[in-house]
Amino acid sequence: MLDKIVLIVAAGAGTRMQNNVPKQFMPLRGKPVLMWTMQVFHDSDPFMKVIVVLPEAFIPVWEGLCQKYDFVIPHQKKVGGPTRFHSVKRGIEGLEKDCLVAVHDGVRPLVSMQTIDRCFEAASAYGSAIPCIEIPESLRKTVKGGSVHVDRSKYRLIQTPQVFKSSLLEKAYRQPYREQFTDDANVVESTGCKIHLVQGNPENIKITHMHDLAYAESILAGSTAH
Amino acid sequence: MLDKIVLIVAAGAGTRMQNNVPKQFMPLRGKPVLMWTMQVFHDSDPFMKVIVVLPEAFIPVWEGLCQKYDFVIPHQKKVGGPTRFHSVKRGIEGLEKDCLVAVHDGVRPLVSMQTIDRCFEAASAYGSAIPCIEIPESLRKTVKGGSVHVDRSKYRLIQTPQVFKSSLLEKAYRQPYREQFTDDANVVESTGCKIHLVQGNPENIKITHMHDLAYAESILAGSTAH
Image: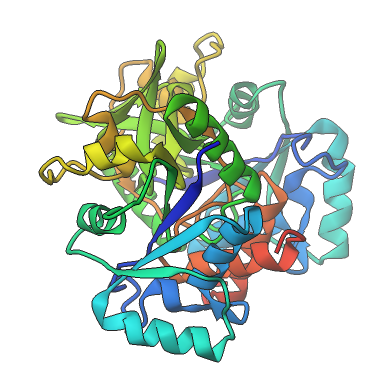
């Protein structure tokens, strides 16, 4: 298998929680969310190279947190851009050789090592792999004048890490930015590349609201994996 | 407004958690899930009639729990059927006059009173109302040979309570059962009736797995509404 890199995107400035602390730095069972996230990747493979994309203004904050918490996982820091697309584009600049790159949201600390392994293995075979879960509720589509029932068994919710051969990812991110680029799979797919789906783990949510943080607390409290 | 009835469907025998206790009877912060669920509806309107559909074998268990926990919310008990469709059909048998019926999953104790109010108000005006939330992740559709990105902004996840004028619900449940009847909206829609969407509350999940129960614990611990 090619060398593995994880690019952790933590470039948000965290306005949604109406809090001055971006979500990736908020405390979760005694340490910042982002440290939990990085720890899972490091535990899954201690030789995996870790790159973290941060908002420029928060780089000193992050460095202070690493000191305070004696956080010793080696990682490279990069400065984020105005959108997720720009942050990923900067994050993958200057990769030295062909490798497998996992792009992961900094605010998804509940990803399992099994999900990470499945993604890297499938990306090694197929060029791309993203984790998905089935839709746990009934699904409807809004249409002019109302909405209609749709068969949820044909749809999947998409998570991260989204893993790609670096050459595919670099090619995709040379495209000009478009608003409809909502995730990396979408950017890579727009170059004509097929996206391979693998099974995610349902608790791998994006921490967006305070109740998500409470959920993560309860999962980590019950987990033997952390 | 017409009189309000809530039909709480708690007829599952709970095999998914590999546990002998069906999920609706599992303890959540000191009392069974189903009691939390019934409490929210009772708090939203103490005059709302409450009907609970239970698995036949568990009716004595439920009666024992009501005694043990001094649970005093008045309610009528009915015996469930082999599928959700059959349980709802039995639940609405013998309604005495036109009313608004909310059909709600017994394992959704985190529904908010605001969601309940919005559903009854809209159903009073439009005949039907169901709560929905936006999709929090990227969405893909599986197609032959792979999957494609879809615009999640056009889709909604559907929750309960699903509220209908009783005449519409009774007419819909006189149809023969079909496998594609996954929720009440779908059954009512198949009679040609339009379904009105209202805003749900995102934490109103269905308790299916142990980690959902942990999530509910953390939400209720932080809530002032309960």
